[in-house]
Image (cartoon, rainbow, N blue to C red):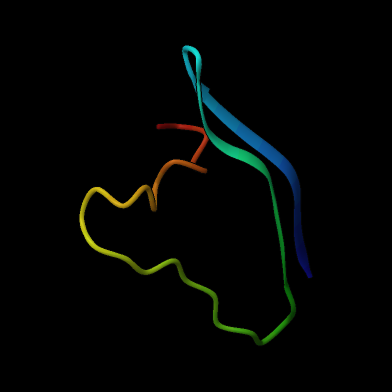
Length: 47
């Protein structure tokens, strides 16, 4: 199981994500879908 908890991402004074969390269980397919510019990569620590 993958468990993600308490992710917050800020850009200066703007809080883009506040307290994001999710669980992905073994065998489950997980993805984030949305249009370009919707913020799909914002939770990525490399962005």
